[in-house]
Image 1 (cartoon, rainbow, N blue to C red):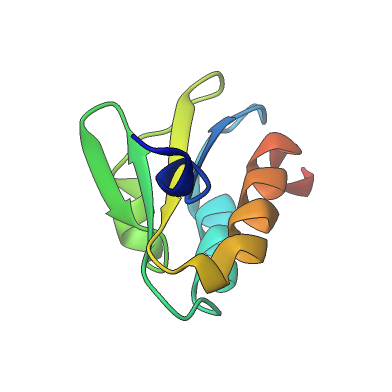
Image 2: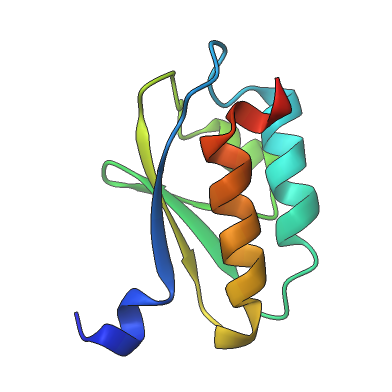
Length: 93
């Protein structure tokens, strides 16, 4: 992976007790839906569309899980940062 591509990806650890549940997934999807390009969340070998609550829930992200957030459009870099902060802050819970 070159340096340009690295800027499109951020890792985050799920810190809240309940992990990726419906409310936290909805917060992610709401932010991701503002993006100009697609945003993906990866956990282990699974990948989910960050704009879809149902897709996010299939990741089964428990507390302590590492996820990777990937954007396809560099114009969404601020959204990438916002999503990483949301996850790292425990979704404000």
